[in-house]
Amino acid sequence: MILVSGASGFIGSAITRHLLSAGLEVRAMGRSIDRARSVLGSFPEARRALGEKRLTFVSADVTQPHTLPAAVRGVEVVVQAAQFPNAPVENPARGWTYMKVDRDGTINLLGALAQVYRAQTAGPSMARFPEGAPRFLYVSGVTVSEAAVTTWDRAKWQAEEAIRSSGLDWTIVRNSPTVGPRDVSFNRIIGYSAFLPFVPIFGNGEERLTPVYIEDVGRFFVRLVQEPQQARDTTFPLGGPDTVTTNQLLRLYLQLLGRRRPILHIPKPVGMIAGGVAQLAPVERKPLSAAAVEFSSKGGTADLALLHERFPDFELTPLREALMSYLGDAGGVARP
Ligand SMILES: NC(=O)c1ccc[n+]([C@@H]2O[C@H](COP(=O)([O-])OP(=O)(O)OC[C@H]3O[C@@H](n4cnc5c(N)ncnc54)[C@H](OP(=O)(O)O)[C@@H]3O)[C@@H](O)[C@H]2O)c1
Image: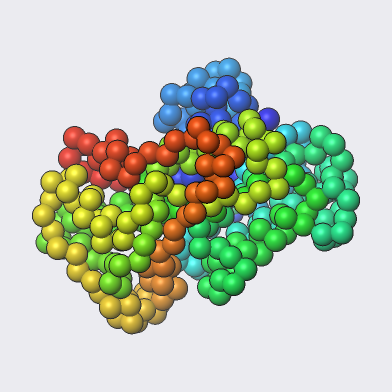
């Protein structure tokens, strides 16, 4: 039994689908069971697993520690892929921040595991959890490092540190920006080209990325679950096989969609002012923030050496092939 936290999300739903396709049993966790049912119910492998009682749902909130022990009871693996709504635009008044959900939410899950499996999470010197305690898999980000200074990287770094010192068997995947039909960042940007004569982005677009295909992320998590000896206590950078700049990535989208549009580079300071103004909007999901402008233009590439060393037969999908699989002849980008 694998608990997937954030199972209705972009990354979590792909991991869930692939685990189910591999014949495994998943307990899908999120705040809303209805949302998880509706998202996962649109996939045939999840419908089949529902019929076979290999897919169940649990409502729990990583920011509410009392909701978590029941969710983690009786599982062999925990996958933490929860993220606050409307990321990367934080809403501190609602608790929708990297620190609250990425860091504290992860620490709360570790605390629930300690409570249920009777070990303390007191730091690096503690004994490991007893035999049979769940493994912990975490979806981190490709730019996370000890030296990173931005809020999102600090939050994930601190979550990673809590995992590494928890006493559980752990695996951390530092995931690159991920492409797929349900991605809400690149699809949103490129979606503007449907009604604007240009594609607007913040900054010069020359930052380098290794975008990874969502199906590869899902497949990789199956390998991590099935081959614990290759994954134990390891941090894997994960990205696609192609390194591109944001400009090159967007041009590839446009080429595959058959649209001729220039990329309009909006200077970051202008974006940050717009982000500050957007914070005044009287809505929960603010359209922009200064930090989100920075986040969206941060870049980051994955060094795949460790992945290739541990999983030499794991093949990553070339970027063009990945995009073609869902842009194809649909004539447009799927709405997230
Ligand atoms: N998307 C990318 O390109 C990318 C790249 C690298 C790393 N990542 C990382 O991958 C993880 C997942 O990202 P994503 O893009 O899949 O996010 P997402 O699509 O926004 O999904 C978020 C998931 O978390 C759940 N959730 C939200 N708040 C929660 C809470 N308080 N307690 C429990 N569950 C909660 C949501 O369901 P409910 O709303 O029903 O609770 C949803 O299932 C994040 O850590 C993100 O930083 C993503």
